[in-house]
Image (cartoon, rainbow, N blue to C red):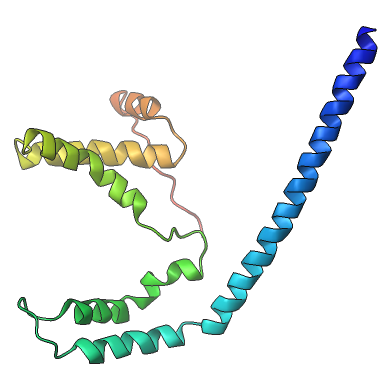
Length: 166
C-alpha cells in the first residue's frame, strides 16, 4: 500500500518535472529568437550611425548659449566622441555591465552617513572608511565572505585579487 502511494507521488512529480522542462524549453526558444533579433538589429545599425549622431550633436550644440560656458548637449557629444569605445563597449563585450549600478551602490553608505551626521569628521576618516569598504566589496565580488576578508587582514595576510592571466 505504501509502495503504491509512493509510486503515485513519484509519477506525479515526474509528470510535473516533464511539464516544467517543456515550459522551460519553450521559453528558452522564445528568448533565443528575441536575442537573435536584437543581434540582427545591432548588426544592422552598427557603430557608424552612432558616430554620425554624436558628430551632429557636436555641430548642433557648439554655439548654443549657456549661462555656464558650453551647452550641456555639446559637452555630452564631445565626451561621447572622445570616449565612444568605452561608452559602447557593452554592445560588443557582453561581460561588461551596461549600468554603473555597482559604483553607485558603493557610494550609498558614505552619502547616507554624511546626510545623517552632516559631515565626516576628517578627510582621513573618510579615506579610511572608503579603503575598508573598497577592500570588502572587492573581496565579496571575488566570492570571499566579508568576515573571512577581515580575518585575513587582521592576521596579517590580507586577501588580494589574483591578476588575470593572458
